[in-house]
Amino acid sequence: MNTLAYAILGLIDKDKVTGYDLTKIFSDSVADFWSAKQSQIYTELKKLVDAALIEYEVVIQGEVLEKKVYSITTKGKEELAAWMHEDEPPLSQSKDIFKLRLYFSEQLTSQELCGKFEKQLEKCQLLLTRYTIKFNEYDSSDIPTAKIGDYLLLKGAIAHLRTQIEWLNESLAYIQK
Amino acid sequence: MNTLAYAILGLIDKDKVTGYDLTKIFSDSVADFWSAKQSQIYTELKKLVDAALIEYEVVIQGEVLEKKVYSITTKGKEELAAWMHEDEPPLSQSKDIFKLRLYFSEQLTSQELCGKFEKQLEKCQLLLTRYTIKFNEYDSSDIPTAKIGDYLLLKGAIAHLRTQIEWLNESLAYIQK
DNA sequence: ACCCTCATGTAACATGTTACATGATTCG
DNA sequence: CGAATCATGTAACATGTTACATGAGGGT
Image (tube, rainbow over the protein chains, first blue to last red):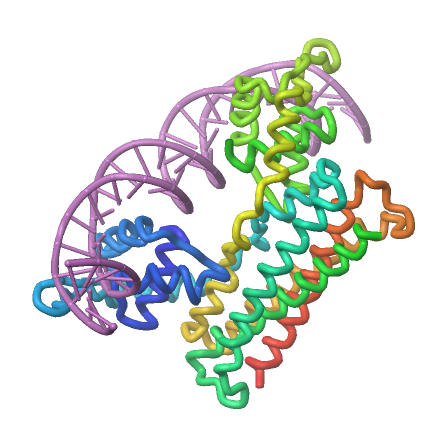
């Protein structure tokens, strides 16, 4: 069982969903710490059904369109719980092309490098705006237990972006001098 | 050509290296923003030689041991320069199992969750110590041009870790209340 | 009618990981 | 002389991406 399988298991455990729903969840809310493409999700769902960790109910949407609404089985809950209690792997090292290029920055003039920093800054600021809007939807004095994870993760993502933006600004000033 | 190919190209351009050297570089200095396993590096080196972007010289180590010291070709330099000028892809979304589990935190008791946070904190602090030692080896008033990227990246990694640690501490306090 | 979203699936390909396989060199 | 490091390569497998393929539902 790979991590994606557990991610899907956890999401189905939270709420009954279709494969299509999962696709959206992976590209929206969960995107900051996990991702998966549509094709991967559907194949993984099949495997999870074969392993009897999830099951589905066919629901008719409109006149004829059949959709599969997945739910977790008892066996699935057990597997999920076991995985949740596993030790964490070593700190994950992300792959970041921007940083990789910065490592090879001798290749560029400082004008070109500044341009890259400015573009990166814009992207970070845009994302920060989106996250901040989401964050403001929470009433911080009253977070339901089920939402604590979401809330803390969003807080973390915002803190991370702010630091990133600060670093980009400082670096930009540094290379301009 | 994939990103790994350009990463290797850039590293060889910085300095003549062997496959073994690259393996160490990927698990040490570059690990914070890119990684590659030994088997992948050797296969990629072969491809780059086939594409005439790098070439090698066989050097005898000791009595008989042959090692291949790679260097970049003119064509390789051109390819690298072209890649360096490409636009950056969208912000990279890292995969983080700790955060994924936090998203499913309802599965755990707050004691268990606190334990996870504490372990994560230790890992971050350990890494921060290592990075700080490295950082202190720089004379910040005199960074040679060739090292600016390294210096800024290390600074960024430290800033990121500090924010991470702060977030972990705050979150820990939050779930303990 | 048209377009966007909802909905599911497969095939081919690219990338990454684990394991296997081998042997020399260096340092204590 | 033994252990850690230096050094190179392949095979099998796992994971992830891009592209193809199809069609219904809902709103304007």
